[in-house]
Each structure stands twice: as C-alpha cells, then as structure tokens.
Picture: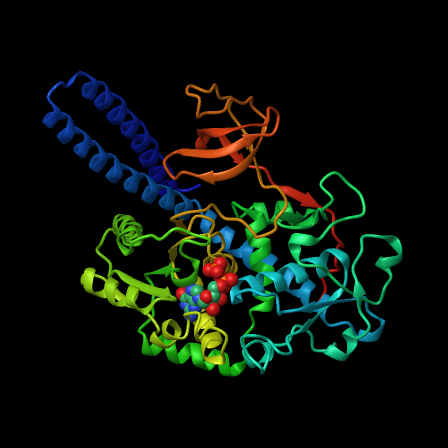
Length: 476
Ligand code: GDP
C-alpha cells in the first residue's frame, strides 16, 4: 500500500458514486420533460457526460492498478509462466530420439484460409500437449507456398522430421490407439471420443490445463485465450529473414505505439459468413480508444491506425475520410489478399505481415467472425500481461472454431421482463450465443433450455479445466 494508491482508490470510489448520482437523477428529470426538443438535448447531454465519466473512471482504474504495484506484479507473473509453458512445448517438441517418441502428424492443408489453417495447427499442438505426443507438421504442397512452413517460420521440432511421421494411422480414443507410434487427428469439427456425453475430447478449446489455470488466472482475465496465445506463440516463431522483413517494414511504415490495429474483412466473406460493416463503424471504435487514451495520459496523442484489409479500396477510403488520423498499412499485403491472388508466396508474406502488426497494436478493432483477427488477438495475449479487453469486435464474441460448448455462469438471479428475455437463478449455466454490445447478451439457460437475452453484468465466464500431462519444468 502507498499514499498514491489510496488517493487513486478514493478518486475511483467517488467517480463511481458521482456517475450513479448523475445518471439516476437525470433519468428522473428526463421522465418529467414533455417538450421533445428538450428531451433530445438532455439525452445528448447525458450521453456526452456519461461517456466522459466512464473515461475518467477507466483512467482511475488504470491508476489504481499502477500505483498498487499490481501492474508490475502481473507483468512478472505473465513472463515467468510464459517461460514455463514455452519450455514445456520445447521439451515436448524435441524428443532426444524421435523414433521412440509418440508422435502426432498434422497436415497444414485444411481447405481454407491462412487463419483457419493456423488454427488447425494450433489445435494439433494443443492435442499434442494433452496426449503427450510430439507434433510433426506436414506443410508440403501448402496452398500458400510450395516452400512450406519453413519459408517463414522456424520448424516445430529440431529433432523430428517429416520422415518420422511415416506410417501414421487415424487417431481414435481407445487404449490400443494410445500406444500407436504415429497418429493423425481428424479436423476439429469431426473429432469424437469413444464414449462420454458430448463425445468430444474435453481438452478442446476453451479448456485450460488444470495445473496452470490458477497461475494464469492470477494475471489474466481469460485463461483459455492466454493458453491459446501461448500455443500460437510457439508456432509463430520467425525465421531470421522474416524478422528482418518485419523490422524493415516497422521502419518504412513508421509503425509505433500508440497504434490501433484495424482489420476490415471484405471480398469473399461478405454475405457468406459475415455482414458488411462501413469504415465509419470501425473508426468510431478507434476514436473512442484514443479519446480514452487522451484522458488516461492527460495529453493528446497522435491517432495512428494500422489498417489491414483484403480490399485496397477500404484503405483509400479510410485515408480520405479520416485525414486527422495517421492511417498506415502495407499495400503489398492488401493487393495480394483478394481471392484471385490469395494462394501465393506474396499473399503469405502479406497475411503474416498484417497479423504481425495487428497483434503488436495496443488495441484491435475488427470482426471476430474472421479467423484473421481472432489469430491476431490470440497472439496479442503473449505480448501483454493481460490483453483480454484490448479489442472491439463489431460482430461476434471471441470463439475458437470447433470449440466445445462455451458457457457463462450467472452470478446474480434474473427475472425476464419481456418475452425476449430469459430468467435464471444464481449459479445457472448459460450457453453464450453472442453479445449485443449494449449491456445485453444472448444465450440459452442450460437448466430451462430457454433462449433469449439477459443483462451481461449478471453472468461471468465459466472456465473449464482439464487434467493434462504435468510436464517437468526443467531446461531442455
Ligand atoms: P476468415 O475467412 O476471415 O475467417 O479467415 P481465413 O484466414 O480463414 O481466410 C481469409 C484469408 O483471406 C486470409 O488467410 C488471407 O489470405 C486473406 N485475408 C483476409 N483478410 C486479410 C487482410 O487483412 N490482409 C491480408 N494480407 N490478407 C487477408
């Protein structure tokens, strides 16, 4: 404890009380005003005042975190645990004698885009960790590059090669299969166990290794995402030439903090898997991030944006419409991102570059319906102690394609007030279907099987932990 901390805490305390006093008193006034023009003015004033109060409260929370020493403590804990996990993965992936190790073959060529393929490989590494099998990646004839994984990234193993994956058989959840030297998993959507209620392995996302959970949760609000970020960080290790390319681009583009990463997914995705969102919609979130930052830092910051997109016209539009922003982006990435050029070395460098700069940004604005942005968000978790809230998604909540059911747990009871709402008791599990980003979420009460909306503040994440091998934490 320190005097600075106590001052920061007091300021936060009065900020919250004044916020509530202002909101409740003015809502009562609003109820009494009859003149429509006066109503309109008062509503505008309230939204402006409440937005400013929110910014001050959030800045005060940052102050509490800093002055209490919690921020530094979180950073230390995150770094220590990341070293432990990366060491375990290095150990798993580098058996002294590969032909004696139990192995898992993983082909990269799932018939989909880079983000989806990387998520497939991440799922393999997660399975390797849960089943104690060394993952051997087959990236021959990769649709993005004839030169394979190692054209951009370090190999997954120094001691196993593709030859060690010969003679693989399909993975099955049976004791005989556990001993098979080399197995291959079906894609995540098709994997099943021999028995069990939902017939899917319990280690699938968003499960967390039981022995790590409380250590992660100490510094990170959402341990499943941190765990995924660590698996990805192991995969996402650059070759020297890739490091050089990123350094050169960082200089060329004048990429530096503070910066917001914006991903605008268009072309083949629109109307098939996602709805179109206008550039203005993304930029409103960017503006809010910088307005908040200005209050936090107590001075005006340069408003820098790294824009990644598969449609170059979006970049021109953003630069034209938002001259007060420094909008940067990599033309080569955008121009090779459309479907006609997508599966090429140029496009591979482009998407890796974009994900690199999105994941290094201070905040992400995108649509979580895209695997590209979810990948950047996961990688971001390995760079900052806790980046759980460093994003705005214009559509979905975070999910991992093919995940096991993702539930929230009610921490307060709720009585439905309209037919659209659902009721629940404290402790009920709610299958999450989405967040309306207006204080309400949508889901299914698993007790009553009713689906509908409910106030988001009444439920929290229900985390799943699973016993996995407890790797020895030693240097390899
Ligand atoms: P999703 O379809 O957006 O969920 O993500 P996928 O990664 O599975 O497939 C989309 C593919 O389109 C990417 O892998 C890229 O090849 C390309 N793409 C989409 N958005 C971008 C972008 O912002 N930059 C670049 N360089 N490529 C993109």
